Length: 501
Ligand SMILES: *[C@@H]1O[C@H](CO)[C@@H](O)[C@H](O)[C@H]1NC(C)=O
Ligand SMILES: *[C@@H]1O[C@H](CO)[C@@H](O)[C@H](O)[C@H]1NC(C)=O
Ligand SMILES: *[C@@H]1O[C@H](CO)[C@@H](O)[C@H](O)[C@H]1NC(C)=O
Image (cartoon, rainbow, N blue to C red; front, side, top):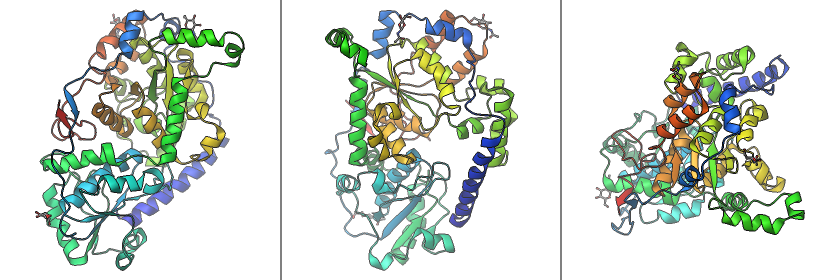
């Protein structure tokens, strides 16, 4: 799609979204209707669960050393090219995590070409609608400084190239625009197709650029550089890190409630010190928004009204083109292709041995169905927090309505949690699996097909469910897996980004 078309399509989606939310507010179906638990039998047992202490301490035990660690960067000294071949510009679409991978690949492509990288331009996402720029999200000076011996980076094009803007490329076909980069293009593709443009014009603008550099047969120093960008050069702006640290500290040192404060505050504090898991927390990434629900074509238990509302929404957003809709809900579930609802992921966590004293941080944007859908989860984990409950209104004002900054804050807290779990596979899940593997931190990867099958069985007892869940997740808690061909180095950082200790 040309950028112009993309632009128009984005605007169209934007307006349909607007008119749709307007129309839906007046329709009969309300997303805020109470939603009955779908697995009420399991839920009843889960609420009354008593977790054996042994299981509890095991689940919180950090990962052992697995023999891999981040590579020692001082081994091979990077070298700056003697002269720059020109400027590389990229325009990145997608959400924050997709853009993050695009930034890493852009650095790699600039290095392959001996070019100077212009700080990537982040497109306005039609769903998230956040106009934050690279510099609003990432610490740009840190970025340039960490990579200063590898490649040259400029914040802005020099005057003579200032014509090369996003608007310029949106208006007509331009010689300096590279728009045919194939998905997972090789390093050679860039040398053959982009280097000549750089040499003729001194600049090349690549768009689209998501997933446009292969993970296989790339020189080792380029792979290392991609890792260095992802795990070292890209850090969030100071105010996101500061706020993240504040929220993490509140999760680790919860303030006693007023009643506890007045009666036995000291006793509370001392007794919680005895608990080995005191101060630890789990991040649950819950991407369960309306788009996701509509896109998956699964049934989420809201009855006929919900089904109709989702079908209508699907029609508006994708003109009904949902690949999965040829399958029944049951088929999709047993193949593990339905995102877990808050209730379902709560049952998974309870079965794995997290008790009701677990501090759970909910990393999520909007939850489809709102508080009603969350209430079941809260029944299982009463000590559940999120950005809203932990941050003051003053703190929240700085990031309010900015989807990318909210996602950045969740990412930061997720990287620093003791345990991370995501209720559905996706970009955020993959990015964090990768980042936490790099840091050897525990990450639970739900076995979606197993969970789908277990939830389809309406006669299963809690003990059987618990047993099946524990067994099905023994090897899905952060055990390091080496990258296979075609897989992303950002999800599987070993062996490309890591060295054997
Ligand atoms: C946790 O569960 C136990 C046992 O079922 C119960 O006594 C206790 O009140 C629960 N705690 C919270 C915070 O709900
Ligand atoms: C980039 O620079 C290095 C060293 O200066 C050189 O060996 C290499 O051939 C250059 N590559 C391109 C594409 O210009
Ligand atoms: C449900 O689970 C029970 C206990 O594991 C098993 O005996 C039964 O066959 C399962 N039912 C279905 C339909 O899979």
